[in-house]
Figure 1 (cartoon, rainbow, N blue to C red):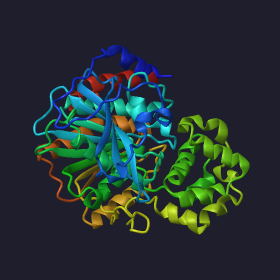
Figure 2 (cartoon, rainbow, N blue to C red):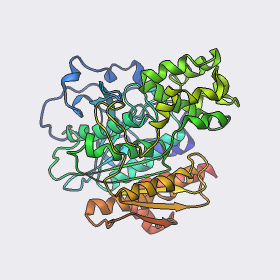
Figure 3 (cartoon, rainbow, N blue to C red):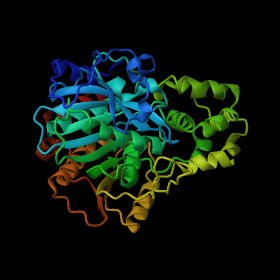
Figure 4 (tube, rainbow, N blue to C red):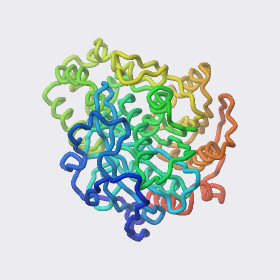
Length: 458
């Protein structure tokens, strides 16, 4: 069911039929999106011969009606070519939005959503259109809504990809990087939304699980996305370390996230999937399969208050075996990824674009401790990162509080006014919640959603 937050949002929005811009080439359009989930919707199926297409090629498209039609002149779902983490060819989907009053030359924001599930039917393209019956988390809906409204208000084109790919490879950084980068290519290849690409600039943005995807895309840009004009990135609440070691002590509340991450990585890597399956007790196998058919927050009845290692025949020792260690290392942001792991493209782990990272030192979901060490390591290797931190904020609250700072940073990059010649660190948030400057940075529609969220939480 939709939250009270979204009920308010939907009630305030008038449904509008998207308009199309002139096309550079002919593309057959399917009917508008329905309540059919991706696993049963033929739109998401790869067409014959898709392997021959270039990454970012758009195979299918259909107009969709969304809660954001008051700020968008058009919205489409597209199916585009991408690459699996293991190097194979694949397709995935994205929702593309055109603003009412586009800035010229065009500005594009690739928004990586906190999908945070290893189930294909929890993907963000399914969540975003009217009539969807997705069971995705409220956090996904709320955070994506604010960002889409903010980007469209600024006159930016917005691409929201299913960056986990066709196998719902949650937290698999290589897969997420390819999905994000090819999502930008899909926008550039789809004239129904973006009629001209001359002198375009692009940015990458995301929070939480979306920050994980954004950060991985950022470090793969020099290789997998070298021709793309991405001028900056901004992300917060970033999981920089996804280690299996921590599973030994996890139970209760947030355990579904870590279980989903383990299943998501297994979705990406058949070797890991085979290993995990042979380590599980029967109740572990049941929970493992449940994570592939349910959104993360629905896993409570399978996980309960059990320690996650209780599902494994060898307990905590499971994660000391060589296969587990191999993929646990792959979960460390900033570490080099070589050809034997990622045949399609490698990375030295260093971000080359100006980047804003923000993270509350009292984050209750994504650990803060590894983040300053990651930033320090990046800075020593030549990265240009503005790292902002503040105490006293939960993970969810921080996402709201830093909204204006993130958009001001990205707009400065678009304007060519960003001065970040070297790493900088700052304590506190520059643009205070609710001030005129805050509202101006994100627009009235995004601010209305934030107010609705605050009211429903009080």
